[in-house]
Length: 195
Image (cartoon, rainbow, N blue to C red):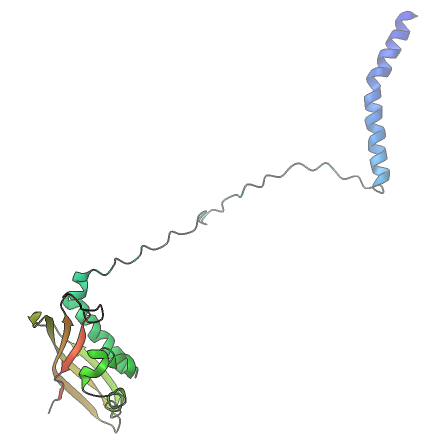
């Protein structure tokens, strides 16, 4: 009899947590209006890479190399001035073209208004240049000459061809010279109509 009583006490003690859990679950169901949700497992928030997509942003392109004083002195730098000049004239940006002449346009021998007016007779103006001659120096300046050919269409109709040299100038790296003076500028043009 003593063994049965001890077993009953042990059994009651073991079953109490199960009954209590059942009672707690029943109470939760009553509190939520009868909708018991299944327990939710924690989610992993680590991003999963998608195949074919980069997981890091693309690298920025390398910056262009700095323009060195030598590059500013080079024939290639002078050629870029002529390219910019003919592109500006072709697109009727006469102010930009004018400023590529020395002394902020004054080396053209015209005012900006006169300079722009000198192109009124052309409907299309397409300039090309060939290989330059050697860079020559005189009185603290450097000069380079390009053979140039311009073709196009006149405003009144008919084509035209102009040929002749164009000379560019830059001040050498002398004391007191400005960065602007040390850039290549158009110094003179010998473009003449071809018969």
